[in-house]
Image (tube, rainbow, N blue to C red; front, side):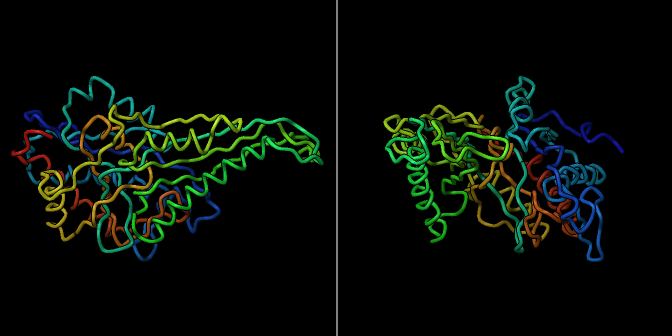
Length: 359
């Protein structure tokens, strides 16, 4: 088989970029119907395997779509590049982040990027034009230690409990908007307590008659693109972890923030050429796109958008429950083969359009 990279055409000013990460998360074999590394196909054509949706299928579909186009004699007028990077599942700092910051990438002059989407249980394809960024927040409380029998103000656990109360009030307000339907999942701030740490450990557990002098809580925070970052930071500093209650915090962002504080999503307006090309290409093979959404979780495309390159999160998987990172992840063979046709049309549309002069 010819190397697909030889098909790349270098006469264009603007190129397309197809992104894919090259590994999968672990799987608990005993909780699967079939060996998660076997790619077993059942009698219904469902192919079970870790990465069937996330995202081994997409990486191979890119290559198969290019093979189809090459076999047909098609020649692109704009370059198409494929990236296969590591590290996406643990932040992308050693993968896409380094690639995007490299001089080699900058010289490509990328005009549009496709990255992973999500499976959809309905008869349409989900498409994402932005995503929530990832923050890791750790709040530490200190206070005077004391005997477990004493009642007194300002102990570490009390200070931390007050923070937890305020954080969960904020979380409840965000969850209410989601429940009422006024905002989609990707449009609200998600904050979830992922660890609590306190107490004096001993081999059999913890000392039960000693109030600790320190306590910590960690939170996974997901921030939508148009949330005012300064306001959220003020909320953390003044309400969730004020120094007046002997609280300190560390905030780690897994994505650098643009200087203006906003991470604008890629345009999904019908007048925007890349969006229109995507819609038309999908329709040509009998598919349809759902309304563009903000993706709740993070992908490598955040690094692309952060350097002002438009990017859509899209996987051609419909009529399939979303099972990434879940047990019994699968993709039906017919859905997979249809996805190759979808990508063929998209790549052809993106690489042959001649009216786009400014991405």
